[in-house]
Image 1 (cartoon, rainbow, N blue to C red):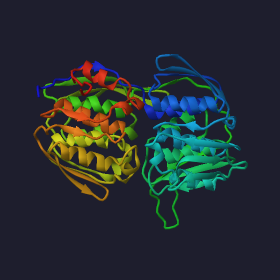
Image 2: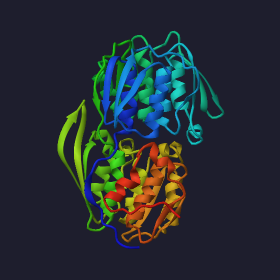
Image 3: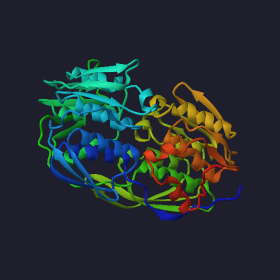
Image 4: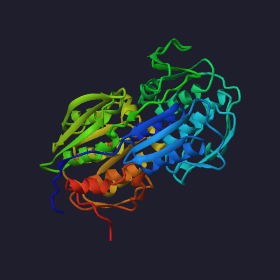
Length: 441
């Protein structure tokens, strides 16, 4: 396979996590908010349509620009039909949180992939706030939500760090009296807290108080209920999870150098970049600035020889979506890369641990499956190519397409349609810097 060289200066689509949250909070604010840089992937568009169905006025004004006329906290109205969130676990879990403290019945569903993902970690704490749920076996969608007529504020200590579960409870707490608190064992992405403050909510983040066993480990986030959220403009930065694909492509393809402008640089989202630097990656962050409380920077990545490392398990919440592309980088590195603490990846759009292990093995990479992770034995040479199953998972698909940029032979995936859920125009953007991705004959 001819050598590919990636070069160019690009921008990636808006941050998916922030886009979902900005739409939801703008819909629960009073007045007109303008959102720019919004990701227009299918996942986010499903969130916008669901909020329209619940009474918010949301109009597209241009590329990534939307005007949202909110209904105020507690002002969502009962939908006439089923709310279909497509492939988006973030949209489903966060919206279920918001609906849990509205006194009407809602029906939530998704595509085949989303309907396989468990919802108990969200529905159990929301039940303690007074909401009722009827779900399929295994607490899976489709799901009926009976919102609490008299919501109860809670103090919820999470057993597993999850930004989605934390956010669902905080959104439910907006329409509950008093203070609702979530205690997370490890810090997770804090976009919800940042945006809540931006729209005018009172949010406290502090070290957690001692639990019954005298442990102080963790962070407590508290929201005060019944705020009057004010309309605000939001500029959504580029998604660091999306930027990861051209960054890793540039690291692996010899003589490459790619600059990505306006990428979100929230410290709780940069675990991948920290890990890549430990592996020897030449990655530079420049032009640091702030937009609406979020840190933003430009990223430059240059071709590098990587070495295997052991990734600290406690880093997982800061890079949970980036393990598939890290696994690709590890396949090219010299020596073993150990990844632990990945139980959360087994209940994403696919079982990402199993999907990555199988795909890498088919490309000739030695992989050991652990109970909670993987060991990837990189040889320092370019892996071979293969046909790889994407398992209807956008990040698996993009990770293996990126692998094909620098592999010794072509890497083909069985289905690329779902990439549009998070990164519309992915192949076109990568081809614009030299990747030469094409549809299989």
